[in-house]
Amino acid sequence: MIKVKVIGRKIEREIEHQKGMKVKDVLRAVGFNTESAIAKVNGKVALEDDPVKDEDYVEVIPVVSGG
Image 1 (cartoon, helix red, strand yellow):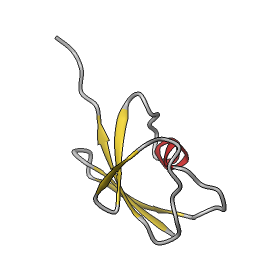
Image 2 (cartoon, rainbow, N blue to C red; image 1 turned 45 degrees about the vertical axis):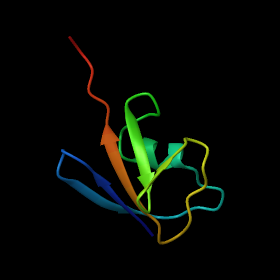
Image 3 (cartoon, rainbow, N blue to C red; image 1 turned 60 degrees about the vertical axis):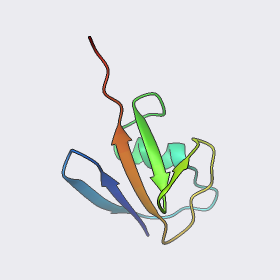
């Protein structure tokens, strides 16, 4: 299982790890895409194509924009 926390949204979930899973797959699973959020895997900023392993901890940080 991968533990996922969305910062500022009070969302914490566990999602099942699948072979070949990447950061972008985790973002999609919690309702974000790579343009609307930044991910940290085990405390380090991750790119969308970085792999995610079973037992990783992913923090999703929604991007805020506007004027």
